[in-house]
Every structure is written in structure tokens, then in C-alpha cells.
Image 1 (tube, rainbow, N blue to C red):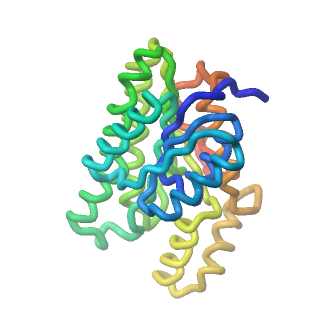
Image 2: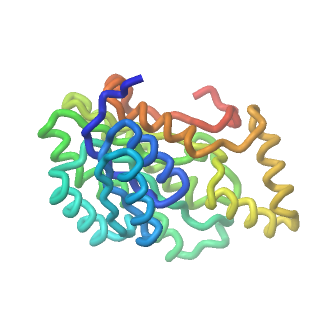
Length: 263
């Protein structure tokens, strides 16, 4: 299926590994040029060079921390200088540390606010002007299944990712008439370093082996397995495509059926 986005430019966060890298690989296969953002410069440069070689696209590595206003501004300025603008924003960042309410002080709450919510605000603010001028744009925000069903020991993620969904829904109405869609994807248990860290933390907190925690999670997933990053990348690529112009303001779970709610 031709997604009709060849030659467009996407900015993807967390692009050096895991879900972000899988999304970059999928978009590159569609002929999309990339602005790849992550904190680790070495891994990011290696990934960008590999994607350029494999897919014949332009992949610009821009190391930076999306929780920092100055870094976001530099990332956006670099992207504008190299590509003239961003057609597709895939906002993806690492999650805050797990724990209970009593485990987090004010600094932890402030850091989670900056990393999860304000990073979305700043990135969207930076790309929307150009999208409005071109009357075409796609914003896809990677949140979590916890926005629909809060998970234990993930209170920081539960709170601020839910705020991101409210932001995306509100923004989607403001920009829909200008050819811009804003959607969230809500992944469940994906095979990433982040999930493995959660297994380890939950195991330590409850006196169990991390393997036992993983089996417990798998038992809660009707399809019976942890999902693979490429599966999320397929969904993101469709939402970023020209074919998904009528889908906006949605928060789409992709979690193997583990949620219990109707919506």
C-alpha cells in the first residue's frame, strides 16, 4: 500500500532505539526524510547513517533532550535550516521513573511535567506554523495504554500522559480545518529496554524475579505475548500518511487486547 508520503519530512523523537527507531525505519521505507532526535549522539548517528544507506533518504541526526526548552528550539531550528519545515511530527520520549506516590518528590514531578507534557507543547508549537502554511500536517504522539487504564507504580506516567491526550484532543479541533491531524497512539507492553526496566523494578519491589513479572504481564495480554516495536511503527506510519486525513483527535490503543474498557 502506498501511503503517499514519499519525499515528506518527519521529526521523530527517541529515534536511536526501541519504538522511535522502529518508527524511523518504517517511515524511511516509505521514502520519508527524517530528523532523528535522541539524547545519545553516537547511537543516533549510527542509526541515521544506516537508514540513509538502506533506504536512500536523508536522515539528519540531531542529538538533544526534548525536556529542555533550549534543546527543542535548537532541534527545530536545525530541522528548518536543513529541510525547510516538518510535515510529520512523531513525538516520542522516554518515560519517567516508576514508583508509588510516596516515592516522588517535587523535582520528580517537575521533571516528568517537562519531559512528557511540555515537550509536546513546545514541539507542536514549533511545527504548526509550517504545517498551516502548507495546509497539510500530521502529528502523532506516543503515549501509553495507561491513559485509558492507569497502571500501578506508574503514577508519573499516568498523570502527565493523560494530560497529553487532553492537549492532543483539544488541539486537533483547532487545526483540523487546515489539513492537520493530531492523534495519539497508546502502546501496551512492547519489547523495549523501558519495559524490561519496569519488569525489573516491579520484581524488586515485590520480591519476585523479573521473569515472573514478565509472565504475569503476558498472562494479562489476550494475544499471549509481548508486542514488537515494528507493530507500533505500522500504526504510526498509517496515521502519518495521506490516507488517514479523516482520523484526528483519536487515542488508539495497541496493546494486544489487555485493556478492559469499551473505548
